Length: 514
Image (cartoon, rainbow, N blue to C red):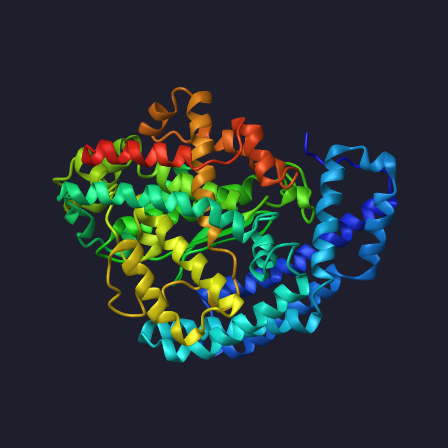
């Protein structure tokens, strides 16, 4: 069991109470960010930066208060307390978080939040106007601040600056480890894409471009969310420039997506992706109706790689399966009317599984998606180290896309300005997308063994057994385990690229016959 017991230790009870307060302050900051990305009027941006900065500073001061450190030390000395595995896991993470946060000065935390909020607004405008020069000074500021942050954390022995930031999202992972995973994966994926290219013909995707009004797409997305068992009484779906999920608090998980009339599957898969994140948040033991551990590490997600495994699993392994469309296509035809009237199951299954280099990461197919991630990993690593200059970002982006995917970038809006991450300092985040794909495929091989009729269930729109498996095996444990340990517990093996490659090669053979 991962449940943190009700213990007699006054120090532990006080520590958990302070952690709850600190987490609540952090969630206020998240709420400000969610509002900024959804409903805040454009003129509110300047003052929102002040609000975000203030909350970040208050949150940091609460989390790094000396009393917190004293309580952690006292609990660590209580052998009876630490003998409980769940408490020991909590204490391990309390210690890790406290040591990392106390290395950061409050003024740097406040400045990162303020500049991030400002840069985000500039990024939106620069992206819309296709003007990299407008955004460049803010990108420079954010990388300068990120270097300071990394230097405060300190690089691990034989490591580099980037490791200090990557560790924030994927604890224990290093740039060299990422590189050792990406290099052979790139070789195998390049071979896969080249084999497809030699076929010389792709499935017809024209039915995906038929105009469908956003309100109809939204209604269909809500239908899919309900089938996935995402609790809309404890969550919502809104529209934004760049889709995201915010697990704000117990009973409040917010999803966002974006709509294009001429590409209905973009919104569908964006919604399913964010709902995968949302189901993880709703499955964590932070809700009073289950186990109210809010504020404790046992109520938090393990890592972004594991979080991404949930979103990518629902988006791709479920959403791009033939079985999913056996259920979804009749419903889509009913909702969308004549737009899909003459489309059959084989048509849409092949259309959504086309492997073809494209410009936009979040709209990329499964075969090429990880190449998009590799470009970003290499570039942010070089920018952080100083090996690349901000002014060279567009040219370097375009060069790498030509080298890796063989495509020319027509403009910066569809190139280096497409992602929001760098604008508010998420340096080290991108590799977790590929880690998520790897974890998802490896978990999936175990899932289909343990739920033998899963495909039949999916074909009928029955996702409850899958949701409960994920909740039991992953969600409910919070941070009891580290990512590598969880992977071994579930699959019996360390993380490997082989399951993902088996899955992709099987899909390509099914769709292209190669």
